Length: 315
Image (tube, rainbow, N blue to C red):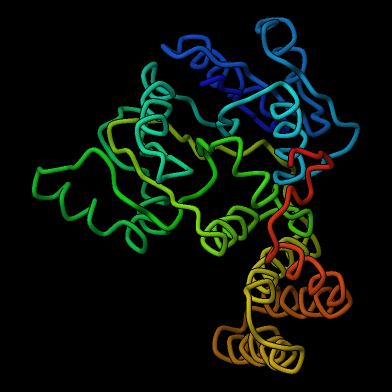
């Protein structure tokens, strides 16, 4: 399989060398594609100078995680990729991981996406965020087997976060790329829902491992208003995920918006006195209401097969 690895960066100078060096050391050859979201640090210079074999796509603006990945995915598809591996800027692979994921997809045509296990830097512990958010919900069989010391080669899993996905290239002609409605938070969960809707299957390979550092680019302290906006962005993504799920007409969606976007935050305000969270929820609800026509259009689009959001005809 011809593998392209897409890494979206934003002020990732502290980590990009680790990610790219791990790809250079991979036992399976791959082409690295770095999509930089208008970094203001040395990310671009490091990639260009120290890893000239990597393709560097420089965006003039911060497109967000999903749209940045779409640029890299489209480049990989134009380059004839058989498989595309999405890797976070703050993650790196073990030398065998990419080869293990590729070998699995070659041997198991019934699966479309393969994920490695997300680990701590010593490779001895599972990343706690991945465990609580995904493995406990979607791979309880792996967790119980790990406790009993009888781990299997792979486990079907509904989904796992997009810090490290290996996907057959054909997935994107069926499902499309990341929905640009999402700027930050939830874009991978939306794509997981679309995988399931279109009948795609994902496997977790415990022997294939990555390290996910979960590091964030340095940011100046947020103002009070900035904290409200940040919470609003996260709440908006939650509402988008709900609105894009198949089923339910406009009246039901408006009732859910009233419940999840207004009444629930109001109850939480009365209980917790967190004004920033409440105002963020109100901001999110107003934005979703204003975008409702576009959201419903995207929901209908994503329910159909096609290379949506990639600006590329790969049918």
